[in-house]
Image 1 (cartoon, rainbow, N blue to C red):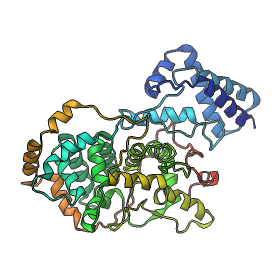
Image 2 (tube, helix red, strand yellow):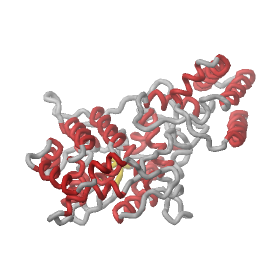
Image 3 (cartoon, rainbow, N blue to C red):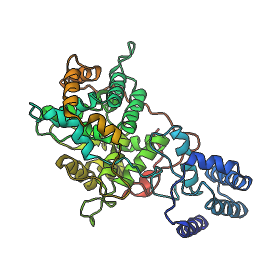
Image 4 (tube, rainbow, N blue to C red):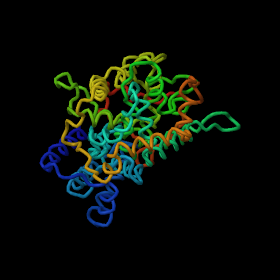
Length: 432
């Protein structure tokens, strides 16, 4: 009860502080706190409280000290700090965030929001138009996924990073004949974190009317390495693995925050922002719960897992799986992208204003010429696409995902994150 009182007190105090101040970087905030003697001592006390409460219940005196430390940190640079997706030292930043948002009650969190700053990577339709302008000359644009691949191949950054992840994901060890799942996931995250969304979204969410287009779309993330495993794991086992990986845990929190559905919303999204939802979906790619299209005859997506063998936790398992398979917000965002609906419906996402970039691509003649050169001979990425396109991927060995940083490992996943998921599923002990 005292712990709940602490949480409520912090919530009330936090409400008084909220004037929608800009989020600070948790790395910079931590450095600023460490260099401040008063903040540093409170931060040390707080960390000791966190470590102590996980080992044994705290006594009355210790609880009072912890309460004072937590309240004090609300006026420190650490209060309201966030991280940037794909930033340098992202894992360390996320570790700091989760250590601050972990309550002294085991298995509970003090916040249900995303650890990431709201993204400013808006979808710029003028930019996309300039990219694809040349492909309309003498060409019937019946396959937007193919057009997306061509557009990527004439952009230096997109082509380079796409070639990097395709090469890493299709490479097989000479001894085991399996790919390096961890490396494949890492370079996939790098691609979706760094390449402009006009390219990544067109590659991943391009609408299809035939199986050839849908198969190319399904193969975008090289599922033979990034998605499939020899046997499907139970979805709750994947969730348990995600909870102890600070990046996976954070990307899932971001996805659940940005793609939270609502029956009261016209768009189907609580935050009325399709762009943020789609961007958060791409953030989950490259983690242990990587989702993908389940076939080449629909736009249905899901992680590679099953709820078979869930026993008494069957309902909990299906609730987690439905975050991808039965999410109105996500489905509507997919459809809106395919229909060309304006995705930038929220204040947290802004249009890109890179005039230099637009000038580089606005000349349709130049784009046409570069696309022609890109097709003959085939670029490494294109060659890899063709090898993967018509050959059904075979499941390979289970991907191994690195454990999260010490400051976040062992922490239970936020019990608010799964919108309708009972707390019990997040407190299920790992299977032996």
